[in-house]
Amino acid sequence: MNEPIVHRHWLAHATPKAAPAVATSTVLILGRIWNANGAEHSVGNAALMVVLAAGAAAAGAFASAGRAGDSVIAGTAFAASGGLALAGVAGYADGLPLPLLLWALATTVAYGITARHWRTDRRDTLAHHRHTTERREEHGHIERVEALRAGAQIQVAREGAAYATALAQALTARAALPGFDPAHLTWAGLPELPTGHRTEEN
Image 1: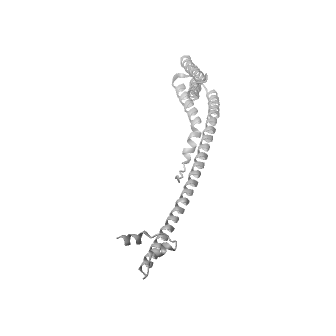
Image 2: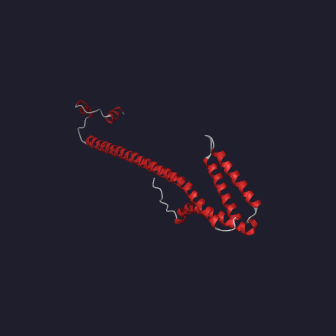
Image 3: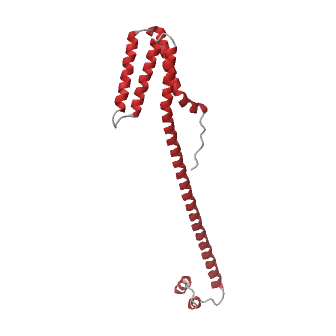
């Protein structure tokens, strides 16, 4: 019933919180590396990134449309579209102000989207923890009641065994006395003693 308490390392708590900033920063760095290797003012590279970003955005729109839309696929497609757009601007632009502005915007949007998922996950985790605690307390109460009931039954059985033993010892001692007559005990209203009858029959 008692589960071990596991303390997570602070890195395990901080890693999910830093993931959106790490992702957008990685895209920005890769875009600037691409810019330094010939993508600056390259119309072909810019057109390629525009087509890829538009395709990813269209895929996200189709995935989220209708009642059977998948929010995970749509979110992934829109995130890919934003990342491609950021990488295209970072690779095409000749200065840092515009890429940094888009990086800040993309990071803010990413945190805004993931914050909602974090709240949902936290709500589900708290509900699960509350449900588990309630069930643990209910099972603990049932176990305590059953333990008390079993203890009472054991105590009754012990008292019954002690009474039977004392009665058997008393009858044995009484039978050893001179003048003991089982028929007289039966006549007095006591239950018939099968031991005495078996002795007489044998």
